[in-house]
Image (cartoon, rainbow, N blue to C red; front, top):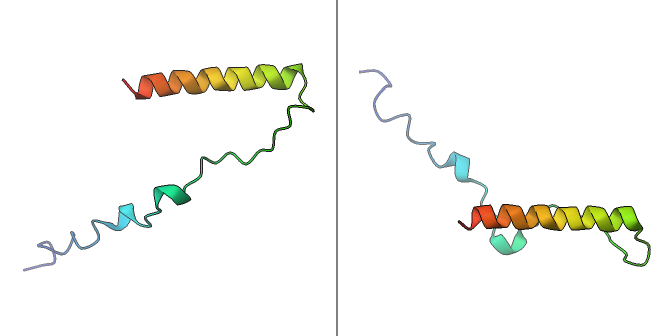
Length: 62
């Protein structure tokens, strides 16, 4: 008998590691924002980003 029986399943949980608790995960956004220094382009970009986030969240919650 060769190694074809039972030896391939020992690393089946390797893809799920490392496990990070949800309270330690970040959303990946590391920007500082100052409303006092924002210009019109910044406000428009923020409005577009909020609209895109709402579209994604409504599609995800269906």
